[in-house]
Image (cartoon, rainbow, N blue to C red; front, top):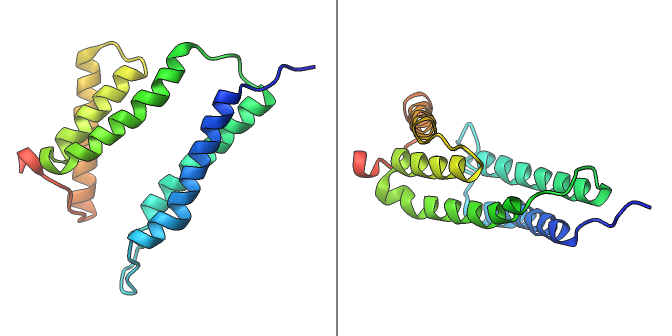
Length: 151
């Protein structure tokens, strides 16, 4: 008889799944207007992210329920707490610091949390990714992003 699934991971998966469903079906429709003249819905990207989070939560639930992966080390539990904290700080810094600075700092922090130990490499990846994303959205797509301290 296979061992029982870990209830902690199953609970986290259900919490993330509930949050994704609440975001997709309640928060996005209530908070984003869908103008009739728009060629692309402003809610498309947030809905895609909510759907992706829901799919990942389902995958986590399935993996833990079926016991398809070996036991994870303690660092994974800490990442469940640190990752939302970094995302929250990113949201707070986005407007005052600007997209490039806030994105580079949060990405560098995420890289460190998930195991990157070369500070120059992590910083370079974070800055290049933030600048490239800013260029694509502002220059190519015409989407305004907060300039912050660099603007």
